[in-house]
Length: 236
Ligand code: ADP
Image (cartoon, rainbow, N blue to C red):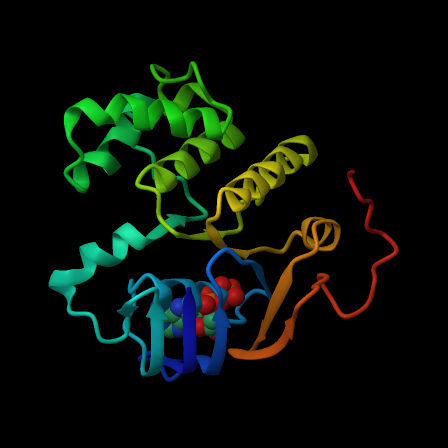
């Protein structure tokens, strides 16, 4: 569950990146966050994961008040939340297996559970058999899948994904969209920021639209814009 009430973020240079943003996302929902570059999407995601301090307003993730949580308790939040950034942040010198294992060790997972959990999450992202590969041996789409596997291995109830189909070609984008559907079907709440109108228009879910830091649309059945775009080609 994600609850945001009257959220404001003013950067030190005076820029108001979020202005009175309020919404609630129930457990198990799939929600797109759309809006032009500079509209506040990244600021919202950073606020939800407490990468930045907000100026005023309430943020709640499950039982935690993110706006109030002290930094010594941030690890509790990390267990609720999986984060897929635009960059994959995989460590280049170590294998896929070791990269994912780091996320498990960070929350003190017993050694005997590590292999099973990694195998499970690699199967989910359809990357079984790549355990020994180095990130440099994978395509951009495959690296992104490994980053998603790493973000899911601790079974967070909420997944925040920032532009997961950016830089992917058509086939890899479709593959990525299918992966997010599988993750959603497993019960994970998903908030996904995207410019990919084909994705938003062909897999219809709720849409939050930001403009100049304000929430200007909250549509249960979505669509990338209010108006159908005749150029959109639906892939299935
Ligand atoms: P989006 O992700 O939709 O592109 P951002 O959240 O990155 O939007 O940016 C929203 C606004 O806040 C923009 O005007 C941007 O220039 C500004 N902004 C983002 N980060 C900072 C920062 N660290 N300091 C000052 N202004 C920022």
